[in-house]
Amino acid sequence: EIGLHLGEVMQPRPMDVVSYAQQASSTVREALQVFVRWQHILSGGFAARLLENEQSDQACLVIDLNYQGIDSLRQQMECLAQLFIKQLSVLSDGEFQLSGLSFRHAQPANLSEHRRLFGLSAQFSQPHDALYFPQALLARPLRSANRPIFRLLCAHAEQLLAGLEENQLLNRLRYQIGLRLGRERGDLRACAQAMDLPAASLQRVLLQQGQGFRAVREE
Image 1 (spheres, rainbow, N blue to C red):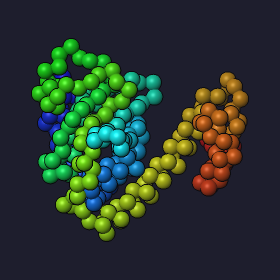
Image 2 (tube, one colour):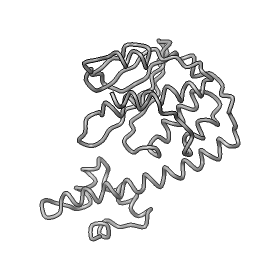
Image 3 (cartoon, rainbow, N blue to C red):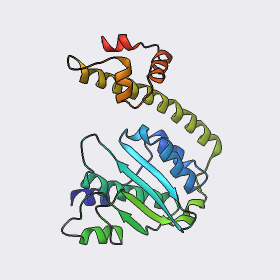
Image 4 (tube, one colour):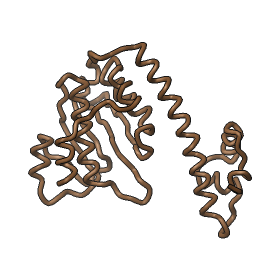
């Protein structure tokens, strides 16, 4: 139960532009939107979403972490779920209450620690790792809200994300070129198709970065 016990003792602290922007947000909803917008600054594997249902009084924060060729990691997600719960409790001045919890990994044999730490019975082998909570909490104002600081932090986060996206695209292209060396067609069109991009779009992005397909291929 190492993931559960790590999550029990760890405390979330602001250590990056995303968490500081969350603290400066106006409401819990905006703080979660900040996380979703700039999640890839924290980890390129995040596939997080905030889901609101007009027909339901429950909101859902999906916190999936995806790594190529690797299934959801039980210990990591059970630790991460507790850190998100603690962060939401801090942001809401202790008003956050978990109403449901789902994990993608299979159900462990012993659930006593899960019930003790989460205060409910989690669901396993589900489509997403997700936290469920009363939707009304999203409108709660944050005492730490600060619009000037928020705008500055968001602008900086956008710059960081843009740089990451440029590097990620180049790394994805290099990966596709490497796969094709000596084995199959490795031209721009084939690489773009494998990256799920139109060839013209890939070429345009490379030009914007002062790169050319031939130069990347010959690195």
